[in-house]
Length: 103
Length: 160
Image (cartoon, rainbow over all chains, first blue to last red; front, side, top):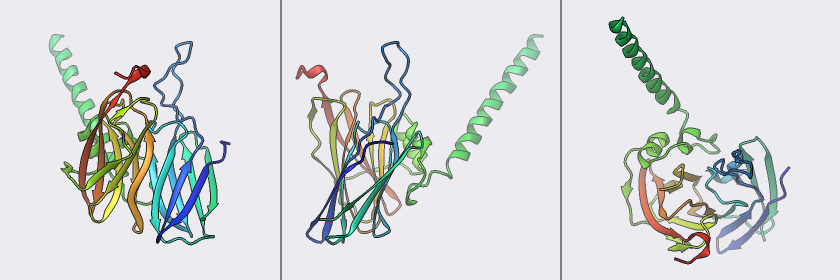
């Protein structure tokens, strides 16, 4: 299980701004270790953000997204105290879901 | 003997081509971009050129657009492993935003599906192997629009 994500969600005007910092190696599958063996690819493939059961953003990522990925987006609506959930799945099938309260 | 060899070669070549066509046809229907929480689009992430990527995403030639704006994206990135990219689409009815990096081993870096009610703005960080163009590919109302930004990557911190 990977480390928890750092998520921050703030109300800005009539929208909610969400910033996420995930903890993941995001190995490309292009690099080699000291023995010259290729390090197998290991990266987040899909990310889904939900608010009140509604998907507000979904993403598909390739290995070209940086290590410990950062993501920020904004959606209309959202009030203080609402919950925003972020979930990701990587190419090994590992999953992680974290939740944050909008501030 | 020689003639038989020719025939065999010809048949072999034909079969390969057929298999390729079949594979391409089979891969396409599963690659709808607009679906929410779509499964990972392997075909699109395996491509090496703009044309191939567009084919895998099921779109035609994208139109150059001035309504797609890069922000927080540097002209010169010191570290290719962490290049901030921010993209805003002012194209009405934006459905998805994709980030493509021209000279990376695989061009497509990320695809974001934007449901109604979400601002067509995303910010993330990507890796770049070398100085290259970053393309922002926006799908809006079924059509594709593209904008490019040239980003230079200085390796080893020599600041060249």
